Length: 190
Image (cartoon, rainbow, N blue to C red):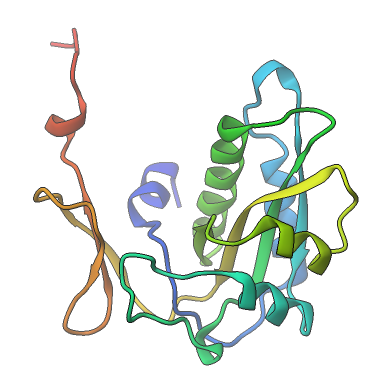
């Protein structure tokens, strides 16, 4: 799969098949993430892979899914097979939004190439996640990437003035995306 295809196909999935991911795939995703672009080469991120119960269930229980759909719940029968938690090292930086974006995008695109679905989540309480993962004081959980094999479809649809995603008649997610003409405010390209 080429990068363009991975970018166009990757959508957030919130319903997963119940089959495990090969451990080497999960480790490879973290191995690739460590090559993300990082300001000043500070490399402030560490990672935790969670794929086995009871810890997997504990992480699942801390996450909030699909905030735009108050009636939506991700059920235990459709929960992800694994998580990669992105951890900020507070001894290196107090904030690293750029690094989090670059690393999470790297993981999600590599997962797409592997045939894995993903969903990045920031809707959790880091203070509750930290003891679940038994993290050292300087490591702060900032993002969680849910991973598994998709049990639903999610597609990009044209933006029509509302950014909120919704479900179609089949329960699949429709995610409004702005057009190029909506986001390209200047170009000197002929």
